[in-house]
Image (tube, rainbow, N blue to C red; front, side, top):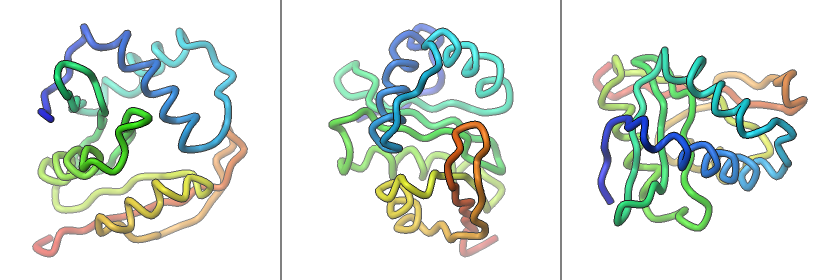
Length: 146
C-alpha cells in the first residue's frame, strides 16, 4: 500500500467509496445524492484539510482529510479493514499535527470507536449530531511529547 497526496482525478472514485464505507460503518443509508456529497467534499472538506489517499495496486482503498488540529474524515474501503490502512492514514495525520488532534465518530460505529481508542484517542465528550440525528463521540489525542 502506498500513500499519496490529493489527486483531483480520484474524486469520482473517492465519493462512492466514502459513501459505501460510511453506510457500512454507521449502519444507515445516506439519503443525499452522490452529487451533494461530491459538492460537500469540494466546498467543505478540501478547503480546510489536507487529503491523503491510500492506494493498493492503483485502487483507492482509503483516505483521510485532516488539518493540524483535527481529522475531518477517515474512511477505508469496505472489505479492506484490519489491514493497517486506517492506522497508516491516522499516523500520517498525527505526523502533520501540532502534537494533538481531535475528531468525531458516531457512537453506533463501534468498530471505528474501538479503532480510535486503540490508536491513543480518548473520549472527551459525548453529544448528539443533529444532521444525522445520531449520538456522537468527540475524541482527542495528544502525543507523548506535546
